[in-house]
Length: 508
Image (cartoon, rainbow, N blue to C red; front, side, top):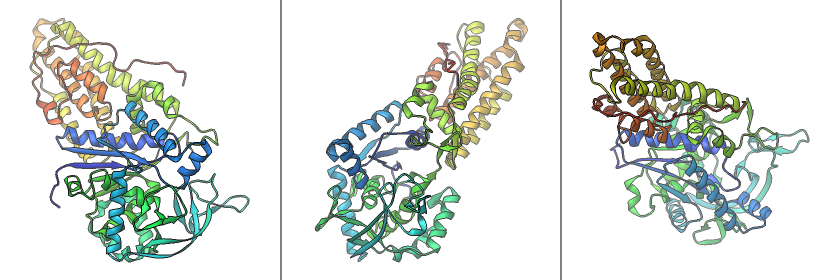
């Protein structure tokens, strides 16, 4: 495939039936780190997030709150945008499915699918989970102690039996094309475990799906049939196109998307429905769907009803938004599930950010001020400089694979090596012997270089803190990784400043 003009990255748009929580935050932070990493490489990144504002559950939530659906989604959208601003999510667009630009694109996609002959009318009879906004077979449901059928993801909600005439999509026609896609392009679904799950579904065969709802007043009107609205998932998935101008040809500046970042619970929609819709409409497929895992608290699912809570606002306030960005990606592998607790958050913050990174910066800058009047000396060479180069190569390798948590480990290893280097070289001893002045220069210069490289490695995760750190080294902006290894530092004036990560005793 020819390289297109931008690196286009999206997240799942968040469903407007409640406030943002840590599960939302993990996804947005991880995608933001990917976007910042690719920007740092010099790529033209386009990063889209947004809100999924239609569907039955939104109607119910608005009704329970005693407001109109539009007022409800406006309020929820404000909550989400405020949270993402605090967490420094560097998105380029925030698409809302209630926008006119989105309606236009959804209806055009449906027209193209209709032109392919993949739509027909029939009666749907079956179970529907309002929480998932998805149709369920009985095999996909579980029975509670009272033998009531429930969705395994939304156990607090009973599923509804639904019978109505709908528009159907010939999903069954795409079983073989989708299997061929996975054979031809295994990178279409990552990590591998998620691709294997989807392959098993496909090997079992696909059935046609209902793609409209009747008698539901909140959604995108079905083109040419005012008695129906577009099924919320067909509506929502199309945001990846409408956010970049579809159906206007300008959308091709960004499309196909390089990566859709989603949760592992919605792979069926993104890895089966979405590519089938696109194949039918003769629109090129995205490069990769990346399905991250879930976050639990103390080994249990976060649940207000069960008293397992760690509110997003509390988590942000605990050690600041950037520390939360770090902790979530440190503790939740980007290719799997992860567990968090308040206590481990404080432990990670203290041992890794305050001690390993913050203390290294404070000591190195203080010694440059004390022994060289604040000017970075020349003459760096030796083991630490070699370690910086090895760290940069390892970091790029894992980050290019989307293994964000491993990128953090590379940075922590460099910080550890640099702290060890301080003890090995003992600059306070070198400073006492004028004959060892050049050795002291090399030591201090090597520490300055290590700080610059470390800041560049951690910049996508800790953007504000690492910008602060490089400015203390006399560098205005965080450089690219290649620049960080070779940028002229000799003669720059350093500033120690306050602790980058002040210690806090929260009692767990």
